[in-house]
Amino acid sequence: MTDMPDTDARIERLPLLDAILSRLRDMIIEGQLPPGTRLNEGQIGQQLGVSRTPLREAIKYLASEGLVELVPSRGAVVKQFGAREVRDMLEVIRILEQQAGIIACTQATDAGIAEVRALHDQMLDCYARRDRMAYYKLNQAIHTAIVALADNGALCEVHARLQTRLKRIRFIGHEGADKWAGAVAEHEQMILALEAREAEGLSEILGRHLTLAWDRVRAEFDAPS
Image (cartoon, rainbow, N blue to C red; front, side, top):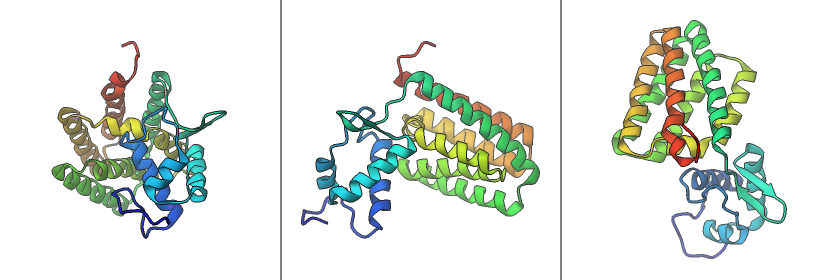
């Protein structure tokens, strides 16, 4: 740690590498480090109050997740996805989640479904407080939890990889009161279908939710309708 004045971004007591990873992910998700931004190790290290060695490790890890690119002559750059890439990834996530939802309705334990309900209720509390980052993280945890209920390691692995790459995209899908309210309403339908073990209903809701996810972010891209 350096002897710098405290700032909101400073990392104090958390395990260092995990703390740096978490902070950098949040900065990318929230747009403090927009797509295409070169990660200046000196500047970021000073902002977070950390040395370059753990920061470099964190950046390499983010590159393995697909959030950062290591570009010759430019160094580490926040990954900038094109419209087609985003659409394709959302399409695969849609297929995976619909299949996972069908399986979950037939084989998940009541306790497993109750855990998803608990995440949902926490998410609603964050929505009521308009705590957008906490809401977002719980939102993504719910999608992960539904996929986990399918108890398929390969499905979970592919889903997690794509979900990580789309963190910023999914976050901006909640920008604006109407978009946010719409996403919350879809999650309400989702949890009710899961609790009722309505496999086809949950699959339909998840499919609509992921289709609308693209509609909510497409304005960010110069893509044809």
